[in-house]
Amino acid sequence: MNARAATLAVALALVGCQMAPPAPERPVEVYTVAPPSPVEEAVVFGSRVATLAADEQRREAAAAEQAFATQPSPATRMRLALLLGTPGAAVQDDARAASVLTPLAAPDASDPLTPLARVLAAQIAARQREARRAAAFKSELDTARVQTDAARNQAEAARAQAEAARTQSEELRNQLEALKALERRMIERGSTPPAKR
Figure 1 (cartoon, rainbow, N blue to C red):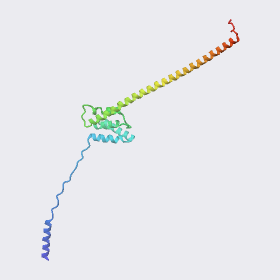
Figure 2: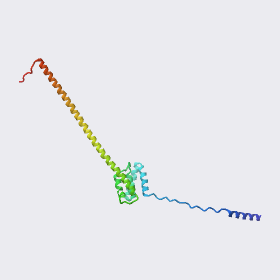
Figure 3: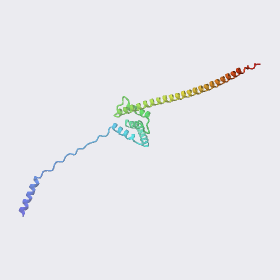
Figure 4: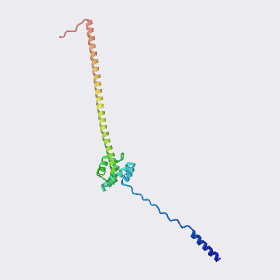
C-alpha cells in the first residue's frame, strides 16, 4: 500500500503543478469627483432658494446677510445677490441686489463669479428699467384718467347748462307766446291798453 500511497502522492503533486496560476488582480479604477466650481455652487444655491417658501427665503436671506457682513467674499456677495435678485422672492430687493453685485460685476473684476455676476446684474438692471417704464406708463394712464374724468365732468356741466338754457329759452318762448296771445285778444276786443299815469 505504501507504493500506492506514494504513487498517489506523486500523481497529486504532478496534477497540482499543472493547474493554472491564479489570474493577476486587476487594478481598481478610482474616479475622483472635482469639487463644484463657485459658479456651479451659486447656480445650485440660486435654484434652490427660488423654490423655497417665503419664510425659508427670509431665513436664508438673514443668514446670507450675516455671512456677507462677517466675510464679504465674492461667494457670500453672490449668495446674497441671488436671494435679493430672485424675481417673486419674499425678500426681492433689486436695488440692494444691484448694489451688492456692483464690485463683483465691475469691468475690472476678475473673480470666477464675475461672468455670472454680470449676467445677474444685467437682468436686474433690465427689470429695474421695465419697472420704471411701467411706473411711468401707470402715471401717464392715471393722468389720462384724471383728464378724462375732468373732461367728462365739463361735458356734463356743459350739457346741464345747455339744458338750463333750453329750459329758459322755452320759458321765454312760452311767455312771448302768452304776450302775443294777450295782444291778439286785446286787438280783437278793440280795447287799447290803459294809459300810463
